View 1 (tube, helix red, strand yellow):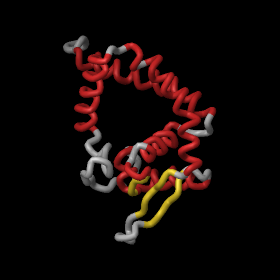
View 2: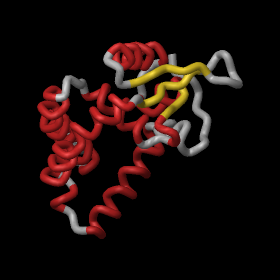
View 3: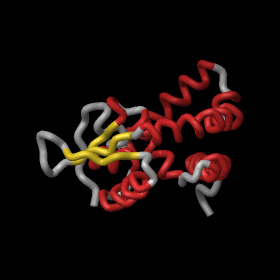
Length: 162
């Protein structure tokens, strides 16, 4: 068997292990707040966007969900009063998801524990130079594997996912 010790396999294995571990660590915080991981991702992306809103197509591109998938998430968050959907004044085909006051309150409820977890398992182990390098590396990889992850924030346009 050739290449079994290839460091590329090690990189993928470590990435998968880290992702699974981080996801498992975050679940109790989200669950206690009545949120799924994708609910939280949607709220945080809206909260960090200009005017705390995104076009539905941009939210789809940022989360990696299909347009129908993001519609289901926004429908659920809208029923819970955390997000409001609003039509676009200049394009009848487009609509926006906007964070509500209750959505901001939910984020404020979750963020202290979430940030403490992030510090405990990730950023707290890195000095400032390591963190800067780590973030640059993650962005470099993200820009290749999910080039639309900043759609609607960076000004870039991405094809609509179905």
